[in-house]
Image 1 (cartoon, helix red, strand yellow):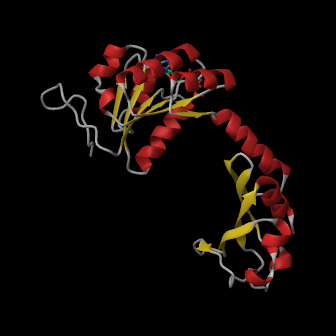
Image 2 (tube, rainbow, N blue to C red):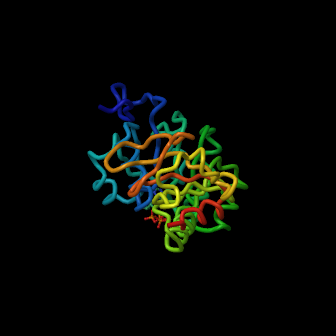
Length: 232
Ligand code: ATP
């Protein structure tokens, strides 16, 4: 059930609970983000200027409204300033993205996430004071490059130069206690967790013994983690 209502009983108040997020722009990125938030139990107020998209998301999000987010009055009417977190998922229309962020910052929204289509767009958003600037296309491109290059099954660069890589356990480790393999010294990585068949992921420790078919999570400097993931 909705935990906030922009068109509530007296038509002027609504409650923005802690676990509510406003998503402005319901294109491919914003839509996927909003649906995932809903799936995880977070209420979402979706805003888009396109009536068709608003209709398409009706019933899927806690509330969906058609509005022009570059207009402060429109956002105030929707009480967007009472939410703690707003995501601006407008990309191609850079002007609309910048104007929207500027309005949100002026209204004092505490945490603003905004999508940038390129570095110049991102720089402007950062200079404006947007708290979190994200680069979905650039980041996904980098991630896929790492997956295409090597044997990694999944890859997350936690920060520049440090990565978490999901890979198959190399046969050289089979049957040995991890504590006896010396992989930290030899490869500069740590095996943080492992998964066997349909079992759940488990934390790895010095007594963990890996076997054929096991999947591991390797943590360490990007190059080391990637090199380790290539081992067979
Ligand atoms: P994606 O790749 O996520 O599909 P995109 O990067 O191409 O999107 P845009 O098409 O610029 O980004 O914007 C995404 C959504 O934001 C669109 O559905 C668009 O209707 C909406 N949008 C753009 N400008 C505004 C605005 N001023 N107010 C409200 N919504 C807007």
